[in-house]
Picture: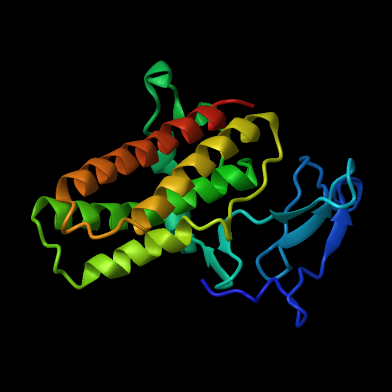
Length: 223
C-alpha cells in the first residue's frame, strides 16, 4: 500500500531520536515501540556510542520501501489466515504443538508480523516464477514484472522492522539473508540464457523463504 514519504522536502528523515529517547518516550507497556503507517514509522536513531552514527529504523509491522513510499501490508481479512498458516506449519521439533501455545498475532513483535505478511505476499510471485521456469515460458510478459518486484522487495532501501527482543535479533538476521536473496533473484541476468542456473537459484530461494515460516513458528512458540 502507498504511504506518505518518510522524507521531508530536504530529503531527510525528519524524526530524529537518540537510542534512549526512543525507548523513554515511545515504548509501550508490552515493551514494544510501534508507529502506525500514518504516524511516520521510519525514524532516525542516533547511536548512544557514536553520535555520528545514525540508524534509519522501521518501527511498523510491515516491510517498507522508503524510496517508493510503499508498505508490504496484507489486507486485514487475510491477517488471520496468514497467521494460522505460520503456526500450523511448525519445524520438526515443534510438531504436535497445540496452536493455543503460540503467542497471538496481537502479541507478536513488529518483525514477526512483518515476516508473516511479506512471506504470504511474496509466495504467489515465487509460484509464478516456478511455473515460468518449469514450462520454459521465458518470453512471458510476466517474467520481467515479477523479477522487478523481487528486485524492489530485496533492495536495501526496503526496510525490515528493527529487532526489539532477543528472539528478534536472530530472526532479523534470517530475514535479512533471505531479503538479499530476493534482491539477487530480481537482478538475475538473462534467465532465458542461463536456465539451469536460474532454476537452481529459484529453488534455493523458495527453500529459504519456506524456512522463514518455521523460524517464525519457533519464535512465536516462545514467550
